[in-house]
Each structure stands twice: as C-alpha cells, then as structure tokens.
Image (cartoon, rainbow, N blue to C red; front, side):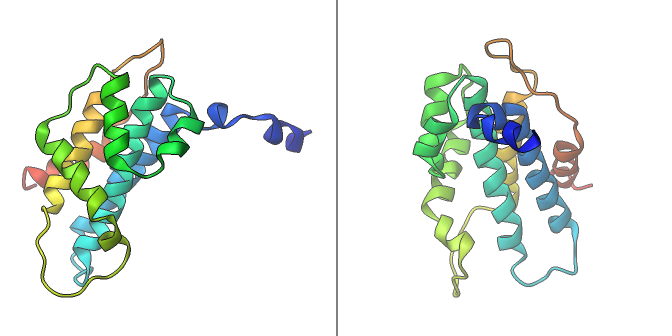
Length: 168
C-alpha cells in the first residue's frame, strides 16, 4: 500500500515550493557554518559558493513553484540560473536588483569552476556578495503569496548570514 502511494504521487505534488524553500535554507545555513569554520583553510571559498549556488537556484525554483510553474517546466530549464531568473520575471511581480541578476548570470557562466578545481589566479565576486543574492531572493519569497500559496519560514538560515555580513 505504501509503495502504491509513492508511485501515484506526481512530481508536482512531491516537489513543493515549501520543500524547495526549506532545502534552499539548509544550503544557505550550511554555507554560513563553513564560512565561520576557521579549520577549513584550503578551498574555503569554493566550499561556500557551491551551497550558495544551490540555495540561489532553489529559491528561484521556489518562487516559480509558487507561481504554478510545473516541475516538468522546471526540468526543461534545468540548472540554468539565468533562465530561471527570466522565468521569475515572467511569473512573479517581484523585481530583483541589477546586481543580483548580474551575480546570477556570473554563477551560471562560472558554474564549471565551482564544480571542478581550477588552479591559478582568477577574480570572482566575494562570498558575501553571493550570500546577499541568496538573502535577496529569500526575503522576496518570505511572506509572498501567489494563488493562495506562501512559504512558512524560520529565520535561522538568514540570521546566520546577516550576522556574518554585519561582522558579528
């Protein structure tokens, strides 16, 4: 009986805005824990940006699920953050800052460098700038209601980064 229930659940029933939001918060929180851990000296930036990238992607997808975008449509877009941001603008009346959009585009263009080690010197935005993008997306979703749906949130994930960004 339980297996029948699992099989009969659609992707749209299983992948909810709340679930995406909670998972994004978990990635945001884990990035803050890594940021504060002084024992992680080598490749610390990479290990922080990787979960922040996922948090940003999932916050974008959360907003789209709130706007009734199907999981099938999200799968067509995949992990292309710029396309997710475009869909966000098409579906939601929430405007993101130009800086956030630029950093989303940067993350997408440089994603390979966050998954695979690239040696040598290069420039990239700071971890704090990426955290600010995730926080901007998160705050746009908190209390936002579309078609009678909204996300329930706790402030631990956002609070940890807000403390870091304020120097606490």
